[in-house]
Amino acid sequence: MRKIISIFVFCLLFGGLINCQQTLNDKAKEYLRPVVVPAPLDNPTTKEKIELGKMLFFDPRMSGSNWISCATCHNPALGWSDGLSLGFGHDMKPLSRNTPTILNTAYQTHQFWDGRAETLEEQALGPVESSAEMSQDITVMIGELEELSVYKNLFDIAFPKEGLTRVNIAKALAAYERTIVSGESPFDRYLKGNLDEIDVSAKRGFVLFENKAQCSKCHSGFNFSDNGFHNIGLKDPNGNIDEGRWGAIGKDAPIKIRALVGAFKTPTLRDVALTAPYMHNGMYKTLEEVVDHYDRGGDDLEYLDPNMIKLKLTSEEKKDLVSFLKTLTGEQIQVVLPNLPQN
Image 1 (cartoon, rainbow, N blue to C red):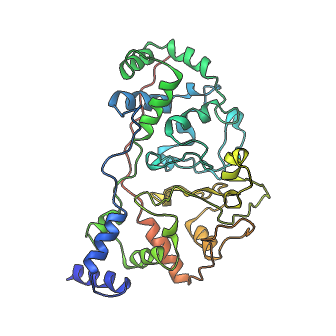
Image 2: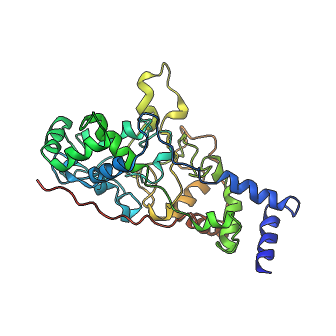
Image 3: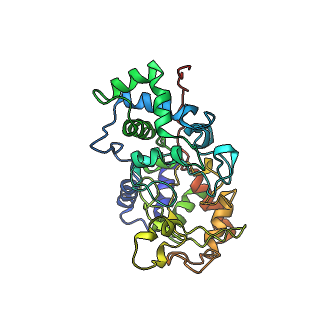
């Protein structure tokens, strides 16, 4: 009886009982997990690459100081981010942007907040070589790794006849990062027909997400991202100016494209309750603050995305929206730290 009543409520919220099951099926298809995790043809995923990439990911020898690993900023215990408003890099100097989660990066068409890398392979060594982040000379790092027989053997196994090279370091890291995917969430089970998995408030929040709040215009599909770039009207509290996507590609454009100025990649909403602070500058600590920002239609209107409008949500609707977002937290990956070779 409870399931029948839940179905009735779902149908009523979506505007009537006609074709209710079809509506539910359509929503399930839209947010359904892809059958396979995509990987490029020149770097097919293998267990050997994953094992090697995992070791590199957690190894501080990837940094010039031998203190910072990829996992320092992308900590599995902190939603694969670092829990800080702004990241920190070499010599503990603060960076200019929030550390994005690397959860579900396998499904993204661009990497980094400004999308300056199109593949995980291209992205992998960016932070490593950056003087502001890990400040590592790749040639020096290759020499250090070659002195360790464990790494040399693992590279020979993962990349036969190629071995330890710059390209293969990036490929191994990318292979491991493609395993960092979100687990099944209450929302996923709800769409499969387990209608008691989320409460009535979250169900109302889902309807708002799809309709009045207009979240799904940008946060769409399984990964809740359109892989696009949008200026959502963030006014930096410290007055900092970050041109975002325009800053990454503007040098190649004949004219200034207004839609790209201050535009940043649409982040995934999977596990979003675990990845605070939010936004590219980490200015919001809670999901409630994020919802308030969208409700008022942004603050800096100069290059505002046309999808940003005042929503006029009630306080109850805001609570429902946050309730829905919390249902996107999936079962967490159990990460066993690798044994790293000693010098």
